Structures are given as structure tokens and as C-alpha cells.
Length: 103
Image (cartoon, rainbow, N blue to C red; front, side, top):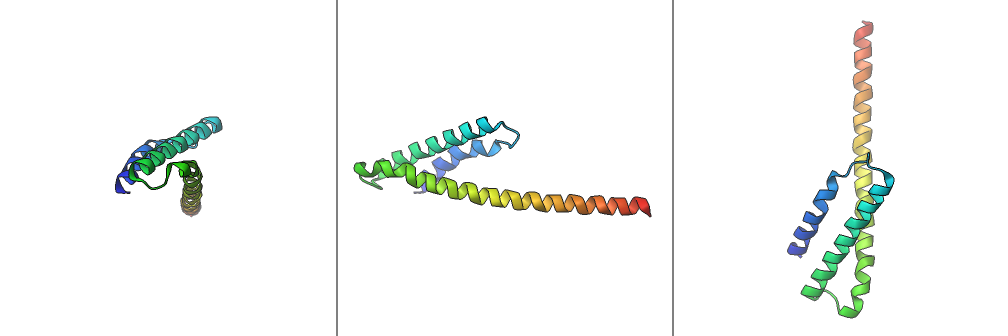
């Protein structure tokens, strides 16, 4: 399990540098590529380590999709919360500067 975690982390790491300034089509294609790579890795490790029988391999993309969607939702919530905090800090800073100029 540790080996599969390390490999999937190495696969996922380059995708962390994808920015929201990318086009929507490119974001979708890169997300699809990431999902396909993760499915392939999990199928390979599942086969190598006997996590499931060969007749159950079709279920792996479903499991990977469930985890993938859960992680995307968690990351969205965390990123939105961070962006909201930064926005509040900027507004507070701008108000403080405006008050200093007026005094």
C-alpha cells in the first residue's frame, strides 16, 4: 500500500502545477489524463498484490473515480476557503490604507 501511495503521489504531483488560468478544455483533458493514469496504476498494483480477482478489475475505475471526486471536492473547498480569507485580508488592508490617507 505504501508503494502504491508513493507512485500515485509521484503521478499526481505534476498536476498540482496546473493553474486555473488554463483553458477549460485543457483542464478537463489534464484531469482525464490524471484519472486514467491513476486507474492504470491502481489496476496494476491491484493485480500485482492480489487486492482483487481478475474478474473484479472492472470495479477499479469506479473506486478510483469515487476517491478522485471526493478529493477534488475537498481541494475545492479548501482552496475556496483560502481564497476567501485572502480576499478578506486584501479588503481589510485596502480599508486601512484608505483610512490612513484620509487622516
